[in-house]
Image 1: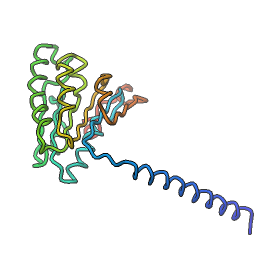
Image 2 (image 1 turned 135 degrees about the horizontal axis):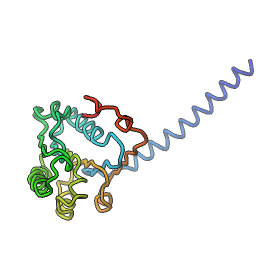
Image 3 (image 1 turned 90 degrees about the vertical axis):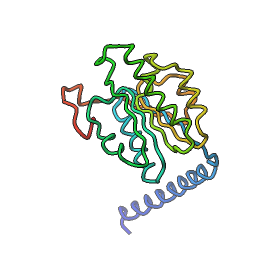
Image 4 (image 1 turned 30 degrees about the vertical axis):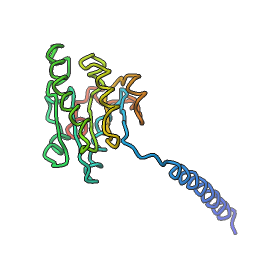
Length: 206
């Protein structure tokens, strides 16, 4: 047997043993995960992809036949691909604040009124046991800017139906929100085309 062939076989054996150990570890972790509950997922950070991830979970949920609700804070002035795809789906209830970003309105009182009105839609979804998944897109901004009272929002999240999943997106998630979440992912901004002067792109950015 040549040295190269023997070396390759040895490498394959080591690989198989390593994968067997990994499978055993993963299988044990799966067996130990016995709790069944609705999850609160927070997607935060300065990087691109938070809302995209949330809508990916929405697509997955719809694929499983789950009833879903979406509330988009801040966005709404641009044509939104996610809304076009899901707003007529019988499994999805879709609400959009439709004020655009705060630097566009430049009217704090108007933004607060719109946030409160939109939150009423979110609160209804969070108290509805028939809704399996709720996406609260860009909710963190409403808390950061003080447009919504933090305790009110946190209480609604904590007191929702026990099997209901909620996904919250937006930058600068508060410490209190992170503390009550089950899963928190922070998306880092390593590089972004917009910073190089490239226009936002349909299908990629909106």
